Amino acid sequence: MVAKYPYATIHVGTDSQSISKRTLYATVIAYRLGNRGVHYIVHKIGVPKIKDLWTRLWKETEMSIDIAEQMKSELDVDIQIDMDYNEDENFKSNRLVNASRGWANSLGYQVNMKPNIQVATRAADHHCK
Image (cartoon, rainbow, N blue to C red; front, top):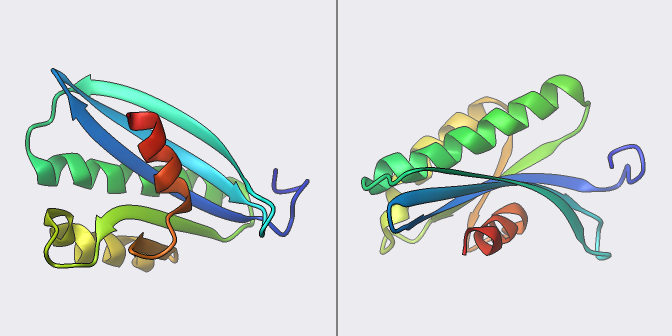
């Protein structure tokens, strides 16, 4: 995809959903082709239900950064990480904003959080439902 579309921006993001006795994670690598759409690759995995919100959401950060680091080691491209956390303090996910953004920024990634552009996490959300 990078060779075919050198102008593409790459976004990595993970979302999760706890349903019944399982927590489903979907990680997406999205190739945004300017105003011409998005192509993406999705990987889903189910684990025993994670009841603690912090633990479940922190795993999203870990999975996204792991994929971005693997890609960075093999490709010479800029990667943005989309995180499904809200910068609005009224949302529970706000508790992870500083730690998650800080970790990703320290590794050199641009981070996108709600309410800003969410390319990869919107696709991941779709695959978690």
